[in-house]
Length: 348
Ligand code: TXA
Ligand code: MG
Image (cartoon, rainbow, N blue to C red; front, side, top):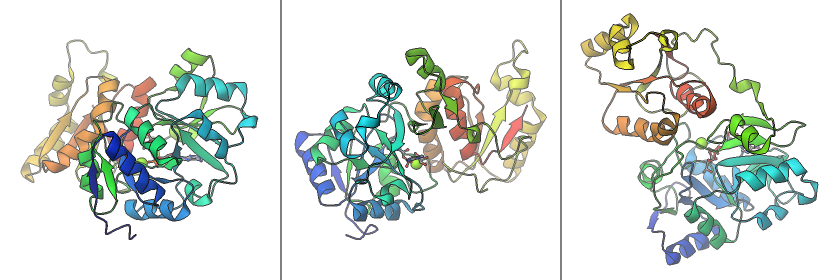
């Protein structure tokens, strides 16, 4: 099967279609499926050839490890040495699975290096989305699945987004509903002394502490930025991910936070830097879109990737996004926003 020339079946969420999807996986094919975070592009995690075709379909570097998805705790046994699980590991799994969090463990010999990008560890997630779990279970295999987008593009949160990038490159897409969370799972490394967040997501360090009393570290790489001054930079830098065709600029008004009677709109219109951007865009005939979640991180998570794709479809050239408070879920969404903007920030 050539990864780049396939007829992409549109499957419903009926039992019969889910069974078909499972069959495609057993035959070494590629199926995109809904999850509560974003849509995944699935293949049999233990079939190296199938996993290689994921990298091909996405145009993704093959040293980037995949998350392995399971539908039941019993499926852990062939992926890791379950006898080595600590009480902390068990508590975390018990409280947060099924759900939007991936745990990184030492892998068993059965998991191919092709799946883990050459690492001795494997990221595992049990999604809460019912269709996702039925699909995994019907395949009878652990499912390796990155987000179902062309590498570098915003992650897909609807099956239409998946088709926009993947039609003709994969065997099928399951037409589930829109992803509820909207950003990818939290990745929590459990292989060190202290659990450490490698990618922030809906399940935050604060929430983990609140629910389990377990303190987790946050990977220092997530706290720094490539430019400590937050100076606006040209897009298209090596740090750029989740990139729409439009130029994304983050607008940070936190220094004005204490000014009374000043909503974001007034702040925008009073800012010299924003005025300059808008005037220049007008002279050049470029279309600007202002995205303001008014500090609502939940809504921002749910909508941000979809909004980027929507702006592209409507031919928007510049997207100005107001920054969120860098705490809790806001921290996770800001991680995606900053990457999509290539760390380009304007302070007003
Ligand atoms: O929500 C999600 O996690 C979605 C859905 C489909 O489940 N999947 C997803 O996969 O976002 P992907 O491939 O786009 O991102 C996987 C992330 C990458 O940042 C990768 O480096 C990290 O997880 N990862 C996977 N396995 C890892 C491992 N063994 N060690 C460290 N990081 C790992
Ligand atoms: Mg991805």
